[in-house]
Length: 527
Image 1 (cartoon, helix red, strand yellow):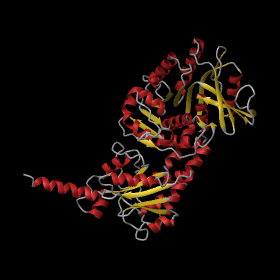
Image 2 (cartoon, helix red, strand yellow):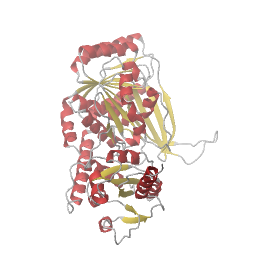
Image 3 (cartoon, helix red, strand yellow):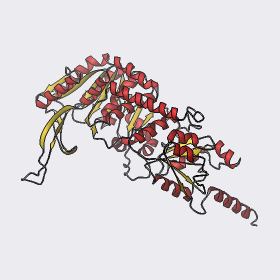
Image 4 (tube, one colour):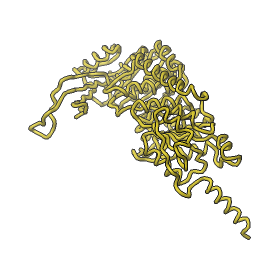
């Protein structure tokens, strides 16, 4: 884990951020049900608790404040009970309601959820979704003109419910030209902000595919969302006019695109199925604060991913506090250190694996850094995932390999493959091998749906990697026995088991090469 992430927590405390967008009241009506309604076949829920928290753009403002930055929140709500509850909830969380406008002709946006036995039974929404009236619009613009020059960054949280009218958007555009600031836009209509000199946009996967006019992947698709989105970085940046596009991908983390830079990938922390709401608000807030503090885009993306990881462990509409994020980063550092100490009896691992492939040439499954690998493994193990590890050259991928890897994946939840580097293969198989360089072999293996992660190693055996990964199951093919396999004692030392899977008969890279050579010789004598 990068120590710079912890330093960012101190750097962002002095920043001042404006959040503008639709404020919502999120309600959670909790109770129990032990009978059906006599009028209809629906459960009767006896309420035992009511919780009201800021939602929508208001949750974004709460997240900024929870990370100790100063926040000014601009919105328009109704002069009603829901609006009063929302203002009270904001005040309790340290967000001033001074700049929230009340309009008698509007009803405050509200989302009420009825929950019993930890299950949401129904959600009912209310509130005005039409555009704000001309007086509210002008009052909002007046506040923007007063406050914009004093801030470090602006977050636009546009849910499409009438606050961000064209006049308001144009006012932000004009202010941004005069007083350029870090400007992050989270909107269902990102193209409306293309002329604003936007620093970053944050579409989720659904919004990204709609913007790109491509089909959403099905859950059983052969490629990941990250692999699907990766070729469209430049198009996303052109469509939105942003310098940075951070596409959040739920359990797959995020893909970050920046002009004149290679794409950057962050990974989500594995967790049980989350019932949190507003993780995207947390991500936008943390990303904005990091960028406004001067962090590089990859560092800002890592910071945002860490903050979102804190929130997805919670239920309901939540925010990430400085204390929670500091603790989370500290635990990640401890886990990384533990993995380093576990390898102390082996030759020390290099800070990065032998070959760090350019992201443009490698699938998102390739892990070029041992610290990142250790963090991923620790996270998966903490959430009860069974880790399977295997290794090989995979010089010319054939049906035998595919069958073997599919059977290996079936032995657990996460399949990690150690791939011999080119130098390693030359030492083992001779100067004429490999046929395909590591970059190509990584690309081909990454295209298999059964493969979760790929790492390269330069040694003759994967023992150092095994000490780092500590797999629950180590899979080996061919004619080995557990007694003759040098990796067996290491695997068992960490409580793992060794599974031997025979290769498919008459399927091997050596046979393919021999067959090609034989056919070439026959053709040479065929006059």
